[in-house]
Image 1: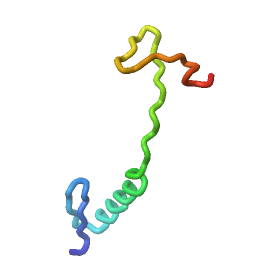
Image 2 (image 1 turned 180 degrees about the horizontal axis):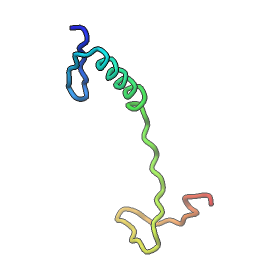
Image 3 (image 1 turned 120 degrees about the vertical axis):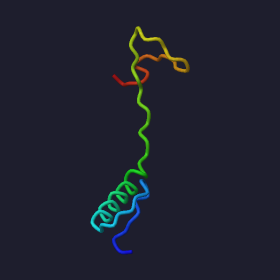
Length: 68
């Protein structure tokens, strides 16, 4: 049937060609750019002096992590 598209994320059927085309473009954009994105590496977290060290972590001097 012309003008019918399935939005796989929400399992909806649209009978309007413009809506179907728009959502297809959104899906393709997400798929091409966001689905292949690589996670950012974890960043160092600076703890306050009075904060306890969480279990499984260890304290290191600021200079051991950062150049400044």
